[in-house]
Length: 318
Image (cartoon, rainbow, N blue to C red; front, top):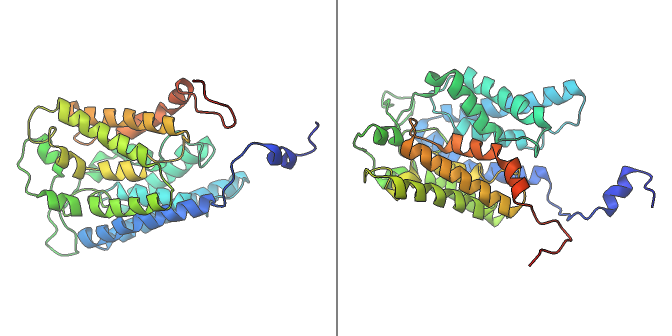
């Protein structure tokens, strides 16, 4: 049968169709990220909101201008750039200069996302690549962590929990403080409670693969528990769970959409968890979430090749 146009090919292709569009999914992710934003404003002050707004505006504007310049389809308003902006801001401490937010947003959208074809074609999480970009070029600009930031003299410079443990210092925070977010860190990563509330919403809306998130967390905790030997940090499951960006990475980044096959998602999550745990145990940097997930993202093509996803309509071999 000869096909006259692309629409005929589209009609006969064996696609599973749903009513939910990219815009709807990304709006759900934005809603899920709101509790953590409210927590950031409470713990670190109104500047957290400013950082998120600057990142979102920079991401959306960068995507729009790039697509306009290339005369390609405009997808800047499907909320995917908004999600990238929010997650990017969540990965920086509240003391980060605004110009750093703008530069990293442009890099995340244009270089990491648009250079590779836009949403679904980017080889790695754009927000994490934006953070890594800043870490390589201006590491000092994102090293100023504080305990609180209420625009008062009470804001006190402090190392993160992971930095304290890596240097052998005593932790002045309880597990409850770590769970609710009353600790120094990036504005969107400190409150495990609020991140889990948002993740529960995504699970309810059937937006994310809960298996990938659990596989990532379990892999990190297993690595740090088995190979950690100091009895205080690397072997402490709850401290590893509630400190750093583990919950943020598991709930909102390892569940990203570049890979769709469940088996591939789980495998990538396990690889990311092993790398993250290895960095926490043996690496010079106390935190490994960013590089663990990015490393696994870069291997996603190889994993896709080795673990053949099930082709729709074709029976699995017994």
